[in-house]
Image 1 (cartoon, helix red, strand yellow):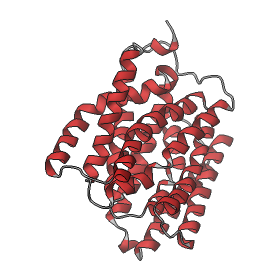
Image 2 (cartoon, one colour):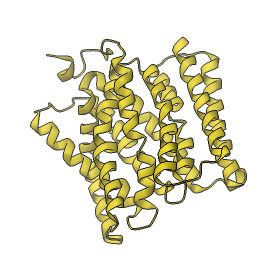
Image 3 (cartoon, one colour):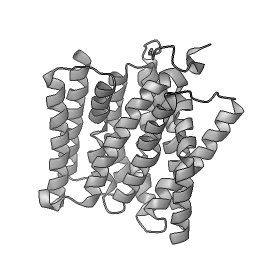
Image 4 (cartoon, helix red, strand yellow):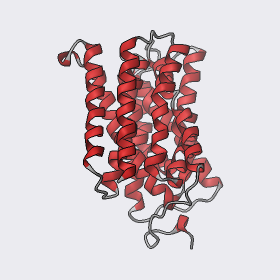
Length: 307
């Protein structure tokens, strides 16, 4: 019996630590960095509804995941592992794609990238809670500062706290649910395997996502240009499937908090892609907001590492 097919007897022990975890994490983050701008491409002209983009990409990824699991004859998760798979599915497969798809119908990709820049600190917080750790005051102070910086940034661009848009609330919610899924997925990957974790999560969530996709198609049959369908294909194959192979592999090798620092490069890359592909104007408020959020997230993760 190995760690990968054990249900409960073997503890969740990190894989041998090396720089490999950071490199795998960077590969996953690079794949994810295109998610925000490509989601914007898919939904901004209204040819595809946010519900279709958010759920349809998960259905395609689930088909790929089911094929991979069947061809490699992977064993089913056991016992409490199914609960962990459900948490990953709720955060990474259902919550984040749907929430960001609806948010980016109105929010610019660069704006969304700054708010989602909270994700590294949020992931570290969830890892602390899930791991029953007790970090020092510095960790919590910097984590709160990062959240406040993101709120202030969104408020300034919206014309004040009263100007916060529903898209901002959706983005904040997406950060929370995704952080929960990332932290739980990182722990489960140590037992179940990196790509197996996201694959079982996709399969578990597939009945719901198929229903939602059917509703979306019935309400508005999807159309679009070749570029829009290409963006959707990337979201389905890379953002929802292949990117997680590398990301959860990196988190499994760990240490999780240090690997999560690599995520700090994601909003920077996403903002660059938004300017390059979408020709969005990247003004000083966006640059300064991104620096503030990323800086606070970096301090939070490092403060946790020192405790």
